[in-house]
Length: 255
Ligand code: 13P
Image 1 (spheres, rainbow, N blue to C red):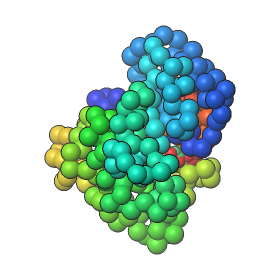
Image 2: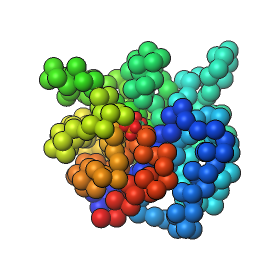
Image 3: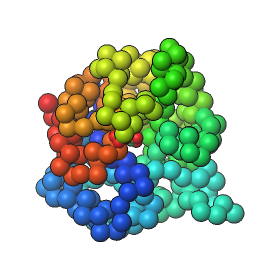
């Protein structure tokens, strides 16, 4: 973690939660923040689309930021079942994930698709959290660095800046498995991402971009991961569904 980049602790709730669960979770987090308006970390929750409006209400007046898990690349039109970035902005979202590996795998999203979505997110004055990461086969084949580079350059919009874009490195094999890369391996990939960002955006801009680690982050491993030089927060799945675990991870930013 650096002194200059404000850490972000983002919860990706995925396809979990009915109205009562989501509202209770968000209200618990707001209570834990206890009126603090400017905590050391930036806390973001990304509920399923169905819960966004209710959560917006539950977190009103707290420092919790609202995010969504995906959007369509178009603003509106004949896209049955899809949700656009302007619709999310209208609900009070600040962030939208683009290119989560579950979208890439389950919905065949390519780097070009992810880039188009990220462009739509930025065009709506929202910030994009662009997700990249290798599969287990790619890691075993020694291709991690190549995969990460290719996904980053293919998914990053031209208008990306430190203020409007966050990159999440999520090794696919670490998601929901309880396994993580070693701290050195995480730092190595994050350093590569920052070096590639420097080529695309310039050194100064790249130095300000927050890089999140995601994949089985929990209260037990968060302190070590968040202490790494180029890890500026976490994108948390399973552990973000329990307020005490998510809060404990956020507290690890203080150490
Ligand atoms: P887990 O924290 O459940 O491994 O999920 C990580 C993730 O996919 C967040 O986007």
